[in-house]
Length: 318
Image (cartoon, rainbow, N blue to C red; front, side):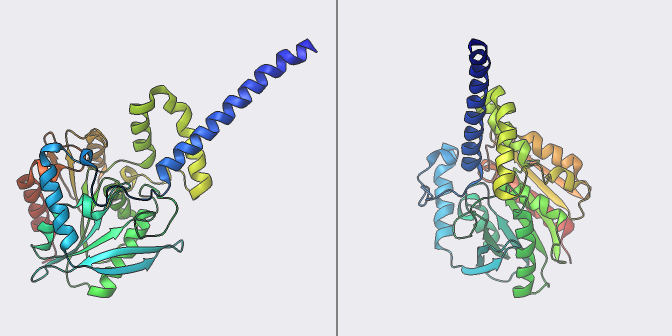
């Protein structure tokens, strides 16, 4: 009997530890991928979202975005979700169409504060999409660009259906949106697509999950990440390594403008540099000194504009 207890106690202890780890991994996966509601930053209450010295300019950009007139568009994703976007026609004559893709648990009004006004006043018809599991778009779980890239391809074809294909089209993504537009290089995009603009994108979902977890959990990451990936597969049907922007870029055909701030401590700049080197298509890179995550526009607006204008001039269909 004593021997049996000696065996049983460690077995029960291991089982309990495994159960606790599995539950913790499930909770982390839910926090990572499940839809977040309500959005406490509408109206913006999160001053930490941006660098303090640029916060007023950021809020001014939000006011512009909130005041602009937009038309709601909807499509149905491949897996049956209703997806929503805001269509904003150019102020004056349109010269290009641009699909704007926001970042993780964010929105276009936030991530394109400042940029949207520049585009709107300079001849761009804009489609500001709401990613799956965000805002008004359906879905329980986001997928860090894996299914979002498929959704973007559908939006590109919807824009052609509604507006025609006479104008050149671009995809512009920020953070998770940037990774999504890079992954969309592997999708069936509209024929008038000219280029992709990726601002502070990551390499693949597994990489960014590991990087963020290492900063917060250290070595525990090596135990937790496989469990998180297990639950991601269970709940979404997808593993975090099912798609890689870096690998897709090795056969990219659409030109890419990569933008990243060197002071980004959320998505490290080395991820954009890795994507840039992997990209087989014509490419440009704009690194903004000291810029924090998704803030390159405000840190050096002139440099950002020059990069965009040079990209348009080099690759736009004439």
